[in-house]
Image 1 (tube, helix red, strand yellow):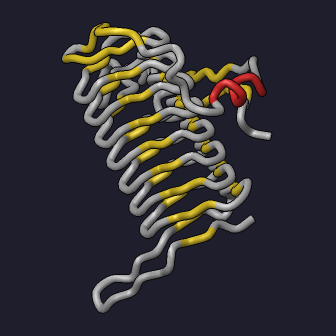
Image 2: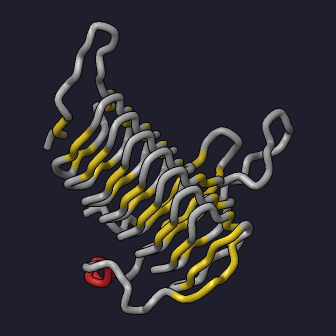
Length: 223
């Protein structure tokens, strides 16, 4: 199916448009804003919302009913699950996985490289964050390389996450640490049904050389 674009807006100074590579695979209907760029090899699920000025790098995947609000940057080989919302001016780094029913607030920063190797004679090793089903990451949070945000956990606004957040815990601070527990009944409607549809999956990333970053995955959400 073809995506549905917002009405094209033209004025005397500027023409608003979006650029989508012909290889992009739309699984259903998508609503796409102005000045959006979607590069080659991406897969866009059904009923996806992509706001103005979003940039999506090659070979990324978006599940059904996912949302990318204005000015979000998604790097290559990212995996975004069903019913996941990523809000304004957040960046998703190369190879990062964000599972189902995840909320990511505005101005969230993520990193996947622990050692800056530019202008140095050694390879880049990428270790992106991993966000599990039902997690909530509030505005202004920073996720450092390699951290896992556990299922149905909550990370408070402005936190610096340097360690893994276990399932069902509340963390915040600078650096973030455990502050409490999420009510076990406080889970997104429909999340358990979605998880049970495919109980086994694995997404892993590896770096083959300094220039090329590949992703090996068993696609949980791709039909």
